[in-house]
Structures are given as C-alpha cells and as structure tokens.
Amino acid sequence: MNLFISRSKLIAKSILILQLSVFSVTAEQITQSAVAMPDAFSAQAAKSILEQGGNAVDAAITAQFVLAVTLPEAGNIGGGGFMLIHKDGQGDFIDYRETAPNAAHRDMYLDEQDEVIANKSIYGIHASGVPGSVAGMWLAHKKHGTLAWKTLLQPAVTLAEQGFVVPPKLAQQITQYITELKNNDIDVNFGDYFATATANKVFKQPQLATTLKRIRDEGQDGFYKGETANIIAKFIHQHGGIINQDDLKNYTAKSRTPITANWNGYQVLTSPPPSSGGIAILQWLKMYELQKPSTGLVHNSTQYIHLLAEIGKRVFADRAEYLGDPDFYTVPVNALTNIDYLKKRSNDISLTTITSTESINPGLHESEQTTHFSIVDKMGNAVANTTTINLPFGSGVVVEGAGFILNNEMDDFSAKPGVMNVFGAIGGKANEIQPHKRMLSSMTPTILLKNNTVKMVTGSPGGTTIISSVYESILNAVEFNMSADEVVNSPRFHHQLWPKNVIRAHSGLESSVKAQLIKMGYTLDERHFGDMHVIINNAGKLDAASEKTGRGVSSVF
Ligand code: DON
Image 1: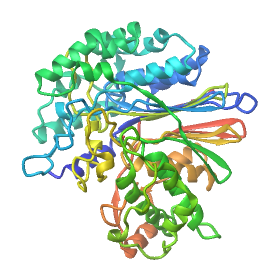
Image 2 (image 1 turned 90 degrees about the vertical axis):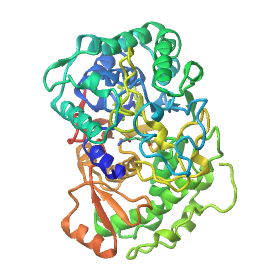
Image 3 (image 1 turned 30 degrees about the vertical axis):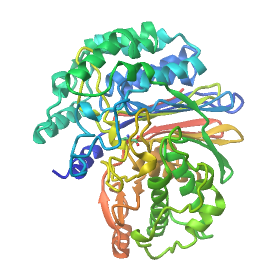
Image 4 (image 1 turned 180 degrees about the vertical axis):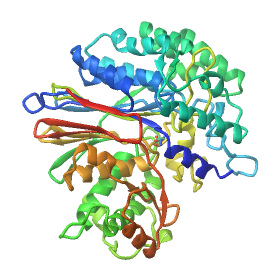
C-alpha cells in the first residue's frame, strides 16, 4: 500500500486539526467578539461562554471539550495541541503537545533490518503519545480563566450524554475511514464506537460523557489520575502498548514564551518550538520581503508561487536539521530568523529557475543555541488554538470504557533519519524519539498585532502544509488586502524541499499558471490542505470566516 498517497487522499477530505483562535484586542479598538470555529456546536458553545462574560480563553476551553465530542476526527481529549494567547496585552503559549512514553526509544518503529515498520506509528496502540489536551486546558484555565471550570466543561458533558445530531459530512468521513481500515486490514476498534453515527440522527457517547464528568468534577486529575488513568493504562497494557499510569501522572503542559518578531509594520506573535511553524513562517515572510521584486508580485501568479516554493526549500532543509523539542535539543531560534542569515540564505534565489533540491542543505554552519479555531473577545483578548490527534481519527483506537480516541502523534517524530513520515517530512537527531520528549509539530497558531492590538488571528490544520496556510493567510490579508472570507477560500500551495520539485496546491490555481509551473519543472499535486478559521480586525470591525470546504461556522457579535 502506498500509505503516503492513501492517507493524503483522506487528509484532503478531512478536517484534521481543530483551530481555535480566541482573540481579543484593546477595548478602545475592539468592541465586538468573534468566533471562527470548525463546527456549529463549538461555535455556539464558544459564543455562549463569551455572552456569559467569559473571556477568549474561557471560550477556547469550552470549545476544545465540545470538539472532543462533536468533531471526533480531530477534536480530542486523547491528543494535544498549542494555544496561543494574547491577553491584557501579553502573549502566552500553552504547549500541550503529547510526549513519548517513558518506555519509548529511538528505534521503536524499526525492524531487525533497521527498516521502518509500515503503519506502526500510524494505526493502533503503538502510535500514541501521552495525551496533553486536558492538562493544557487546565493550565490555560488556571492562568487565564475567569469562569468556573465546571461551567466550561458542562456543554461538552451535555452533548456527549444527550447526543448531538450528526452532520452529514461527519457521517461520510466516518464511513470512509471505516472502509479504509477494512481495505487495509487494520484491526482497530474505531468502528465499534462510531459505526452507528448516522447522518442527521442523534449520536450519544455515554462512556465519553462519564470521562468528561470526571474531568469536570476533578479537574486534570480526573484524567491523569484515579479512575480514568486506571482505565487508560489497563486498556493500553492489555493491548500490548507502553503508555502506563506513571506516564499519565507525570504529563505536564507547559507555558512557553511565544516567538515575537517585527514584520512589515506588524508584530507577529507565533508558536515557539516544539512547533516548527513559528520559525518557518518568519523565515518565509522575511525572505519573501527580501526577495520580492520592487514592483511586487501578482497573487498566486507563477512567479509568486515559484519564489515562495524556493523559500520553502530552504525553510524545510533547516526544519529537518535544527528543529525539535527545545527541552531536549537546543533550537537556534534567533540564528534561524536573523535577517542577515536569511539574506545569505535567499540571495541565490532566481525568479525564473528552480534550485536543485540536492544542493539545498541546512543553512547554519556555526553551532548556536538554539485544529485550529479563532475567537476574539470584546475586551481585546485573542486565542489561536490548534489541536490534533494527528491524522483523522488518530490511531483508530478508542479507549474502551473511557470512550475517547487515542492520537497517532508518534508519527511526527523522525522514526529514522531521512525517512519521510506521513506528511513527507524528514528529520534527524533533533527530532529522534526519546522518552518524555515532544515530537516536532507544524501547528502554528499565530496572532498578528499592530501597536499591540490584534489585527489577525490565524492557524490551520494540514500537517506540514499548515505552515504554508498560515504564512499565505498573512500575505493574503496584509499584502493583498483580502477579506477573511477571501483569505480562507483562496487557493493555497506548498513546497517543502522533498518530494523533489513537487508543489502541493489546492485546485483552483489558474490553468495558465499551472501550465507555466509545469514547464519550469515542477510537478503539481492537487489536494486540499485543511480548513482555516480566521478573524481579521478591520479598523475596529471584526471579520471572521471559516473555509467553505469543512463544517466550520464563524460569527461576529
Ligand atoms: O503537529 C503536527 O504537525 C501534525 N500532527 C498535524 C496533523 C495535521 O495537521 C493533520 N491535518 N491535516
């Protein structure tokens, strides 16, 4: 089976990551609230929390738990993510990325010949990292919340207990996934829990409701200790997995300092490692400013796409070499985003010819230290939250008795140097597997500020294409003055060094542009990347949009 291709097809049709951006701006400038969410249930719940006087972080926490019920392909308590916050004028980054279990080791996905064992990091009990979502929401609540934790959890409990009406797009995704599992002889229990989810019918999840009630009543201990932890550890042990009670008890969400940088008159507030995305979008945006012709470029023209693809080659060569969990590996953040370095790195770009893939090496030679949704509250606070179980429906394993899906995030580690993961990303030492380490991510929740007031909240699902979706959304809004609706629905494209000269692109690029790119030597791989949910502040008026392909709902109120 060509897993990369078969999963890509599925990815193209799925919302993989939830994007949660709750964004707020200063009171003088923003007096409205806005949500841009992956489904109608989370949009309604987040809006209701804001209307009860909650802030953007409160609304984000409620949305995260609601999505664990109504958006099982990506919403989760069995996965992880990043929440970027701009609150009271200050930035914060809640890192609730999964970690490798204590018994994990570098070669755990290799066979005796040192070859990567197909599917082991993608389906089934061995694919999961220790979940971080509940700890992440608890930390966000402790640091920034204003409403009671129980109030924030209740909407999810109610939706799991009393059920929700299944949107036809979700029912279709579930059927497709069950068929894929069957066609590939993958033996996981996903169908036992989700096969009965039928379009336009009420679907109840009693086991998940019980788990959520324990979280509601006991906080994060309701997941990482006691009954829920017992159920998880026993289930995983029975099926030969390695995550145990100590792994759960020891999981810690972290508050990190967001990356901030000036670009084009804005302050970019973005995701630090273990996200690769913040560094990557800054490299992309800055090299674009350095190398674009003084006459500018036409949006989605051949030259525009080629220039950004050339930059992408360099960005991804650096990503593979230097980026990993900063608690285990010194990531040279400043060196990689330094303007002199980026000048040197991009000076050989030609606007007409493609640089050979093999000639692009990591650029630093000296050793140096190294499912998104958007909400804005009327107090001027903003949250951009991207959360994931990795591929749609994660590992396909549901914890029996606890009713939630486990992630397959271990695939984001580099299983072997130079071997591509499901998103075609490669890596080496910086992202090799070690116990307790966080796997490198492309999730890039980002907030653009002008004079410390929120201008834009953005983020996306889509594996490595997340990075392109995010920097292109910023260019769409800033360079091309698009509305939120235009930002999320314009065709996007992505190049990541390998596969060689392949540009992944949404359908919808002009045929003459496609023909010219092919003539230059590119191969086009048409697919959809993942649904964006964006909010823009236009002189105090909020503009929110969810990409049309998914089940997203946005509103300004
Ligand atoms: O953290 C990451 O980069 C990936 N696990 C994200 C997965 C994803 O976006 C799936 N969606 N297409």
